[in-house]
Length: 560
Image 1 (tube, rainbow, N blue to C red):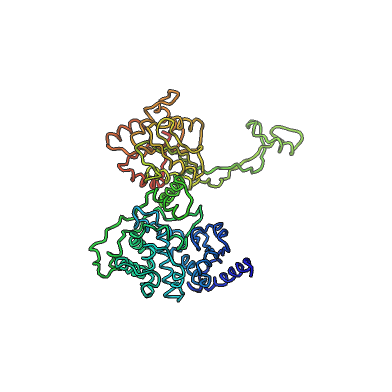
Image 2: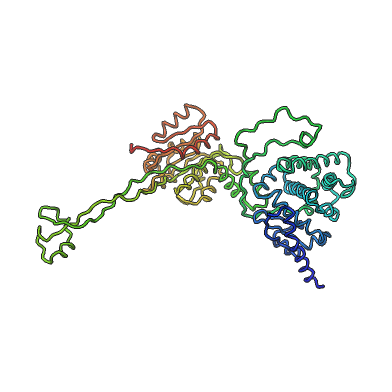
């Protein structure tokens, strides 16, 4: 038989096992057929590297390297291999959101060793899937590991010993006899897998803690785990929120270790959960396989943080337009305004014009038009990025978050947004005028200068040189906002005059969101900025509450 014929036969053989692999997880499980790669080159072209199997959570595709599986002697265990991959779609991690939470939970159990989190998360998911198939479905998962000897690694020995305990295999079946302390860890690992089988996310951190001391040569195990993968542009919802709760080592978990007393009182978590820092959010995305830059990760982070707070942005009601309605003609008499004569109607009545006799005028009525749609108020946003502000790509910047809430709320109702990030002189990043591009706005807001403090007066001045739609101006800063008033532009015009004329031309008011340290400072800034709404916060986090409530405020300014 030729090599090509043998390869074709292998593909046919594995494809025929797919329906049975699906039935191992239930009669109603449906996943499209796997991608069966005959050669390693085909597997690499499909994105499978460093292992013999992969499951893609974004498009729910199983990818197998049949050549690698044959080399490992697993060709006659196709049902076990395929059912295992289906298990990752059905049991753990099942979808992108849970995969992200799994990885984040494992990272918390591996301080300073977070780089190993994807591999440990795969080991944990494999453990849960294999145990279900071995015990409940009667598949020969132990035989897979008998034929797939792993490296002489402490982590692999510990992991194999967990399987021996789970499946009541004689000691030494999957790994040589291990030391007593390793055996004790394996006992905890086996118990953990059973206790948290139905709530596997809760046990992920504890499993990572058990693996921690064995990670000296963890890279050697990557080839012996099936890989999870997502597309380069995959969206992973819910990743910014850290709602995992406290971690506990299995040795101190009363659910796992019967000899441990339950804690007297569990630590309370703040309502609403905690949030990850932007840098950690980006690291998790990249470990999931999402190809993002720091800038793109930051825009995703603040978009997700802002989403629960988005509210309708202020709008203005347009008056109902009355439309003229022709109702016919009537006689025009001498003494009435001459411009009322309808000369066409007059000529149609008689070719000889006799004033007051043949002259006609148009009779008009009025019809109420349809109610006009509310006019969205545009947003002109200025966010301080001087040295006293945090870098939004590293740590949470509440200035950026507040700006994102305001901007995304405005875009939601059809308004246009101009976002300007400012620091020292000539340190200005802005959108290309007023735009409807959400990504362009967020890219500006997530930038960072960290320089001096000089409000961009030329931007404010030039924005309102020409009449435009009603616009609300928002400045987010601290006491550095006084550079908007005290400074002069490059033409020598005082900032106070520029701010006053811009506020009048905007037509929908202006708001200063400022972090000020005293009442006296607030009074000083208020005296410098008449006509502006000054909202003072004592802590940057309070900006979020204001931004969320801002859209709920129906403000109407009188002409004065």
